[in-house]
Image 1 (cartoon, rainbow, N blue to C red):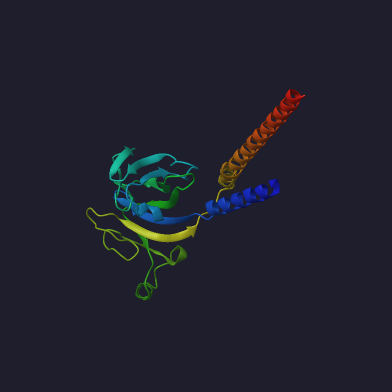
Image 2: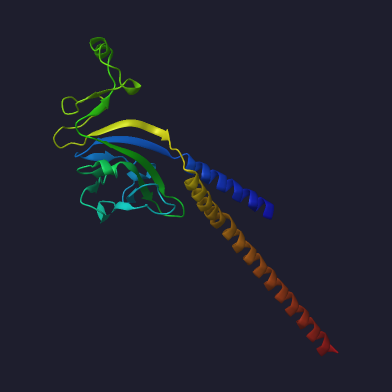
Length: 246
C-alpha cells in the first residue's frame, strides 16, 4: 500500500514538473510611446465572472507575482497604475505609453475554484524605439540595393512612421502598435526556477497524495478502535452474566 502511494506521488511530481517546464511563451513587440496589448491565451479566460490577474516576471505557485491589475468579470479590483487596463471579453492587458523599461516577461493567471486549477499564460514583451523597426527585405529591395552593405541576419532597418508592413500592424494615431514575432516558443527554464518549481510541485503532490492517505489511515484506526471497544464490552457483559448465573 505504501509503495503504491510513493509511486503515485512520484508520478504526480514528474507530471507537474513537466507541465511547468513546458510552458509556452508568446513574444510581442511594441513601439515606445504607443499602446501595446498582451494576449491571455487560456481556455478558461472566456468563462464569465472569472477572476484574472496580470503580473510582471515569472508566475508564482499560487498567485500573480508583482501584480499589475486584477479583475473579476467586468470589475477591476486592483490597478497598480493608470497605464494598465484589461479587456473584460479577452482579459488581455493593455499598456498605455509603453516604455523601453516595460520590456520583459508578463503573465496572466485565471483563478478557478478548487485546488491547483488555475491557468497561466506567459508573454515576452519587447519594446523598441519609435524611429525604427525591423522588417524582412524583399527580393526587389535586394536587387535595387546591391551596393548597400548587408545587415545582421539578413534584416534591414526601416522607418516605422513611414510604412506599416505585415510584421507591424496598428493605427498610427491611437491604435495599438503590436508585432507578433514568435508564438508558442519553448521557454528556457532557469535551473533555480526549475528547482523551486520541483519543490513546489513536491509540496502539491504531498497535499494531493499523503493527506488523503493520512485521513484514510486515521479513519481505519478509529474504526478498529471502536470494534475493539465493542468486543471488550461484549466480553465484559458475558463475564458479568456468567458470574450472576453462578
